[in-house]
Length: 621
Image (cartoon, rainbow, N blue to C red; front, side, top):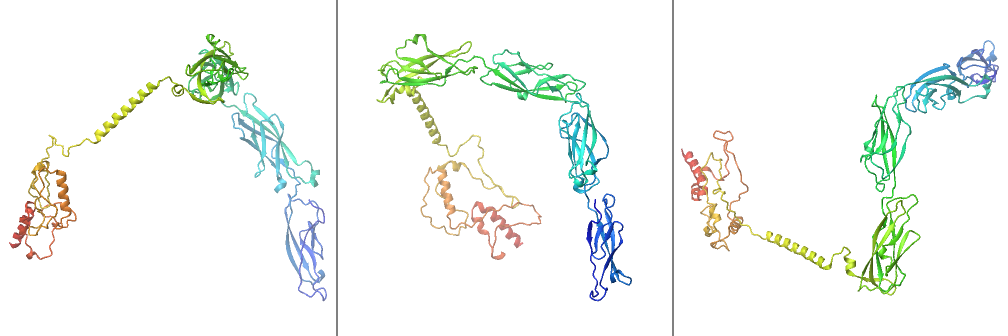
C-alpha cells in the first residue's frame, strides 16, 4: 500500500570532467526500464513511486534501469547506466481465510485428556508477523469439553480434549472456530474484519469402558461390637457401555491383610468377617474392585473408609501406677496424693469419672477422698501422728466409674507408705523393704538367691581351671599304632637298598639313652672340638629334653658341612638324554680323588662309598 510520489531511494553518478568548463560534467538522470511503476528526478536522481496501491502479493520485486547522461542530457553526451532492484515490504492488508468452511473429526470416548483431536488452518497471504493468527472456539455445544491452541511453527489451530467424553451421554459435538490476525494495521481497517470462522463437527466413537462406581469414595460406620457377618454398607457400580455387562465385586486383599471384611460379589454388600476393636484401630481403609464379567480387563477401584464407632466396653483405671508417701508428722487434711483416671473408650461428651471408696472403707479412720474439678481425685489424711513402726504401709482401694450406658467400674488400689520427714515435710527415710522390695520378696529370700548364684559361679570357675591344668602324656601309645619303623626311599641312584631302620621304641624308652654318640656326618680324620658343658646323660632323661640338646648341638657344631638346602632329584631311567647329576663337587683332578674313606663314615655313607668305588673300578678298566 503506497501513495503516488512516495520516495524509494536516490542514486548518484560521477563524471571525471571538469564541471567548471561547459556542460561536460552536468548530469541528467532518466529511467530506461521500470516504468510506469517508478519515476526519477532528472537532476537529484530521487526515485519515487509512479502508481498508487502497489500490491506485494501480486508482485514483490521490480527491476529499474537508470541512466545518467552528461552534456545536460543533450545529444552527443556520454551516458552510464545502473540497475536497481526494488522489493516491496509487506503490510497487514490481508485477513486470514480458512481453507474450508467445515471440518470433520472423530475421537474415541476413552481418549486421554489433552490429546490432539484435529487441526484447522487459516491461510494469510501476508508474511511474518502479519500472518500470525490466533484461534478461539466462539460457539458450539462443546466449548467446555474442547480447547484450541495455535502452533507457532505452522500457524495451525490444534483442537484438544479438556474433559472426558461419554459416548452414551452425547455422540457428537459442533464447534464454531474463529481465526484472527494477532497484529492489525489501522490503515486497512476499512477492508473489513481481519478474521474468519469455520465449523468443526466432532463425532464421539464408542469404546469399552471400565465400570463406574456410584461414588468416587465411600465412608461407612460400624460399632465395634457389631456381630460377625453383619452388613456394614454397600457399594454400587455399573457398566457405562450400551452392552451393560454384569459387574462382580471383590476386595483388594493388599488393603485388608487381616481379612476383617468381606464383600458380596453380586450386590457389593460389605460384611464383617472378624471382631473389631476401636481401641486397636479406629479406621480401616480398604479398596473395592469392580470387574466386568464379559471383559475381565475392564476393572475399576474405589476407596472405602470404615470408621469403628465406640461402645462402652472398657472400665476406667488409674492413669499410672501411683504410690503415695505420708509423713509421720503430717497434718490432718493434708493432700497426700492426687490421682487421675483413664478410659480407653471415647464417649461423645468426653470422660467423666466418679470416685468412691469400698463400702467397708467408707468410714476409714485414716484417709478420705475428694473429687476435683479437673476430673482428678485427691487423697487426704484424716489425722496426724502416723507411726511407721506400728504400720508402715496402708492400702486404699478406690472404685472408679465412668459415665457410659451402662456404666463400667473398676477398683484400683493406692499404696500409701509412712516415711520419716523433716520439719518442712521433705521425705528423708522410708521403710527399706517398702522401697527396695516392692514385688513382695523378703530380704532372706534375696540373700538365698544371691548365695546360690555365687556358688554356681565358683563351681564353673573351678571346673574350667582344672581342665586347663590337666597334663596330657607326651606320647600316646595306641594299640593300633603299627608305625614301628620310619623308612625313606630315594630312587636317585636307580634303586637302593632299604635304609637301615631304627627302633622308635628307643625314643619311647628314655632309659635306653646312654650319653651322646659320636657324630658320623663328618670325616673321622677330623678331630672333634672340645665341647664345654656336655656330660653323660643320666638314665631316665626326658625325650623332649634329649631332642632339644641334640638340636642345639647340631646348630652350634663348627665342623658341620654347609648344607644349604635339600635337593630332590627324580630318576629318569637308564639311557636318559639328561644324564645324571651329582651333588658332590671336587676342585682336584679325577686322578687325585680317593673315596675309600667314605666306607669308614658309618652305615649312612655305606651306599655312597660303594657307588664311588664302582666308579673307580670302571675307570681302571
